[in-house]
Amino acid sequence: MDIKTLTSHSHIPIPNPKSKHVSTPTNFFIQFHSSTHRRRVSRTPICSQIAVKVMSNRRYRFITACINPSLEIVGEESSENVENQVPISSIEEEEEANVGTVEVVESKREELATNESIWSQMVEIVKFSGPATGLWLCGPLMSLIDTAVIGQKSSIELAALGPGTVLCDNMCYVFMFLSIATSNFVATSLAKKNKDEVQHQISILLAIGLACGVLMFFFTKFLGEWALTAFTGAKNLHIIPAANTYVQIRGLAWPAVLVGWVAQSASLGMKDSWGPLKALAVASAINSIGDIVLCIFLDYGIAGAAWATMVSQVVAGYMMIEDLNKKGYNGYAISVPSFGDLQQIFMLAAPVFVTMMSKVAFYSLLVYFAASMGTHTVAAHQVMIQIYCLCTVWGEPLSQTAQSFMPELIYGVNRNLSKARMLLKSLVIIGALTGLILGFLGTSVPWLFPRIFSSDPEVMHEMHKVLVPYFLALCVTPSTHSLEGTLMGFSVSLTAVSLIFIASSLYGGSTGYQYMQRSKRLGVFISMGAATLHCVAYAFGTRKVFSASKASYLLRFNVAFRR
Image (cartoon, rainbow, N blue to C red; front, side):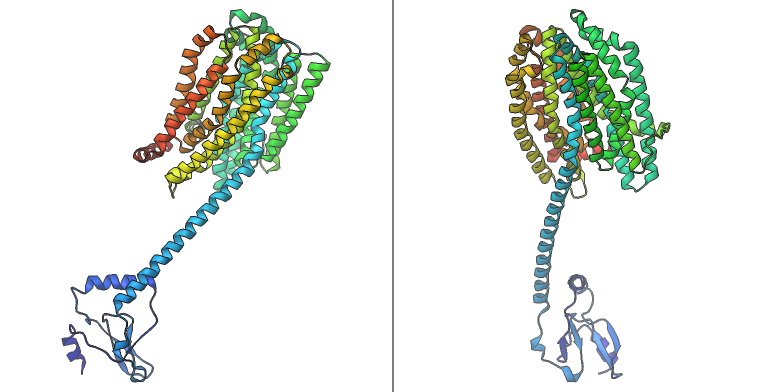
């Protein structure tokens, strides 16, 4: 048979008894060849291609592109019967089964690796948020120490702490945007491994913090007494001198406080929570010793507490900056931010600023309403609100966990809403259990040990009036932190801001004053109601986030907002 004869009948399948099976091709080749063959079999002849292969014996052999790609023409010395051939259909079915098995095994391995990765991330979050919890505890703890020490001496000075802490402590949270912006910018620059950019971000934020601190210093210096008078009202003019003394002394530390916040947030952005914790631990010790010496032994009263707190804040700010210097950055270098830098900070910090402003406005209204009801009421309110702040801090790690894990699960590359719902459910359950524990502990202190803070019977009586709603407020708050962190992790900024603003300002402003005027109860009633409304509002917001019909819309909104 010659070449012309073979090619003229190339459409006729030629059985080849001198053939054997060679090694099975790879799965990819089988799938590719079989799919290509199926497309070609109806259009081209079976043996339409002819190739010439030079063998070791220099004889020319013909290899045809026949049905079975695993068949090769061999010499007479290795011939087998054609009946021993395996049909291509059985081979394809076997290979497809093998491919399916491999895919299942690989998917299980990927799922296991994902679970292990999530678990390792949870461990890292616990290691990081453990010391970070101490950072959140130091501020309320120092305020609680001031409250306990001053309350032993005078009910009037204890009442003066209420408006005093509003201008000193609550106003600090207005500048929380500095902390958020610093942590975000430093972490982003470190991810790019650009140390010069990290130094630049720290320098401009230190400059902004210093400028804001100087402005607040002049505000308390020249407008502090006017603000206190407008805040407390005409019925409580007798507490203005003590409150103004406290505010004027604490106002000296405003620049150090805000600069220290920037330095602390920079360390947290570098995933170092131990350095700031050491600084705040030293500051808490200085504050405690100063309160005992100045207030109890030297009888300086509220002025002694203010001096102790101011010195501790200056020392903490200095230690924060020195901690930055130990990391290789210059904590004393400041740079004037450009318009682009300010715009970038504004785009990131504006939602946080509005959110914190709504919270500050709400808690300031509580103090205002309590102050309008008399000295003993505002004194009792000061004790209860400080214990409340100390207890609710324990819910912050839940919010931080939600902010860390929810973005990846909601709009990451491997988006998985079912896992996000499961994580949210776990956080809410943990928050509920934490709330029960905090509710019992936080309520037992003013109930069983009220003399720690004041020996005045009327103040203790006012504290005991609100134990039931106070317990409910403590129970609800940790779960609220979980929902709040979920919304912030998704970055639905306008939704979160609107929910917080409505729940805080409108509810507290409209119903709080009327209800408290009638019942003569503390602002904890309104705090409990607002906390419950917060929880309902956040639950509604997270339900919208996890809704299948709304997920794509929210994703597009988030991308557009980030741009």
